[in-house]
Image: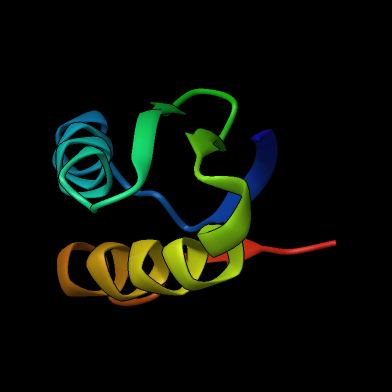
Length: 73
């Protein structure tokens, strides 16, 4: 399943790249990309574990950029 999410408070492109790398290392993630300028996360991951993967992605993001959050709609 591929979904797009807005991100809050991504302060620099380097941090966005680190977040992208961390999310791509999560088991079940096929591909994750972060567009720093648009403040968007696109994630393609296992359908059955998508919510769990998204929780893990939030934890990885928070370690790199404390105020950054994935906005779930």
